[in-house]
Length: 585
Image 1: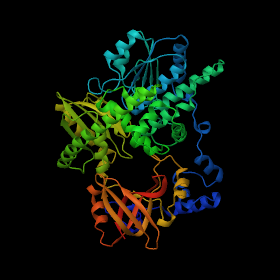
Image 2: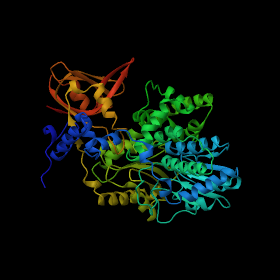
Image 3: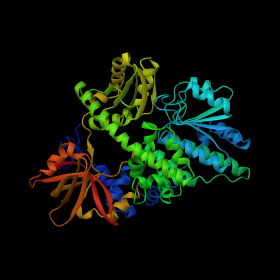
Image 4: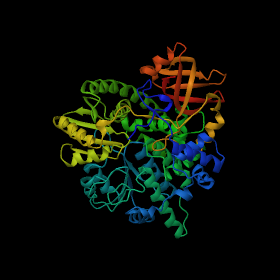
């Protein structure tokens, strides 16, 4: 089989990647889409990549995703009817309900959805979020037994699918699990386990995060109330929480997730929720929210409480109706996020040095260290994964026990491997999903466990991965990159996991300005030599080959590649390239 030709003849860019452009079949599909719809070529490229048919009706439906068209029937999930019936029975009987949630954004948003819904129905729910360090992830025997003594129903969100012992410990109390993590062959002894990633599900809704599953439960609850002539709480107004969780948990933006995020951003722009309004203000957001803001400004701040502060801060912020409490919580989370970045930087440097000494060419990149904060190991694993294009695991050691997190790359199922190695006994516990997983391991078993994980990942092809190819959607000239075009392309979003924004190559460009800015970032202005010019920003580029090559360009011309965005400054909007790579022209 002949290797595909490098786009613009870039076989090895400044970052060592081969550029791959659209093929002949895609070019023809794009032409057909243009003729059928009259949409801009750059937008047609994006639609073709998403598998949209070359038909005006199909294009219009994709560009305006609605819950009405995309929302699945909640009852298609196993145990949903049992869960909804028991949940509503508790509401009608005014029973005591506890919400046990994970400490990340998805868990916090899931808990907030239930708390807000129940509050609108006149009920107060008890929130319980375990401490990351003292209790670890998910339900534990002591917490569940204590909650069972004082509550009639416990709802576990974003956790619980693998918690056989702790759920059994909740004697005398019904437990409902609303989760999305990979299930085992047997389910815990809960009244209902609603999880699209149970082994007996078909995977159709496997892209949902936990907040999406919780939202479907509330849809079913409202449907049942309506059938009885009772108006349930407003669910559309809760989509801001579902959108935040979907993006922050890196759920693929496909199917109903697109509608969740699109409509959730519209709801968030109204600034009705005190917690999100306060968080946006402390984060300095001065424009309508986008998926980028959810993933990189709001999400990390909500997560900061669970990582290095009080575990329940994020859920409390998202569920509070008190603007004064919201402001205080947002300020605290912002300070914790600054502290988290400092802790992360120290662990990242040590982990990268250790991984490099071990070698970065195996099927698994891993590092472990005493005193590494459990709250940042997942972020550091993501950094190692991005730097090496390999699955990565980072572990903090304390008292002979290691608690770690792993992140994977496209096409490699890390969660299944972690779950298998846990079942084999080399890990004390472990689980997750394809792209992310958590684990606990005895320190003396660490080398053997990592070797076994690496061997299983190698069977999936992780050991053969090189620097990832850079996929280019289309060529574009600087003069064509307008705010209007970017807005048209944005209609095919939201962009993120599973639905990346289109990447454009700007060929044979002149570097007009290049300077290091901030902490290792690169600011560039480039043009085509005919008067058109565009600004670009490359985050972290001064730590790699891009920064040195472009600041010291010496008049050389370059092909530049990246994703377009609108830069807003002092009320003015202008196109900007989020620069990802470059190659000598």
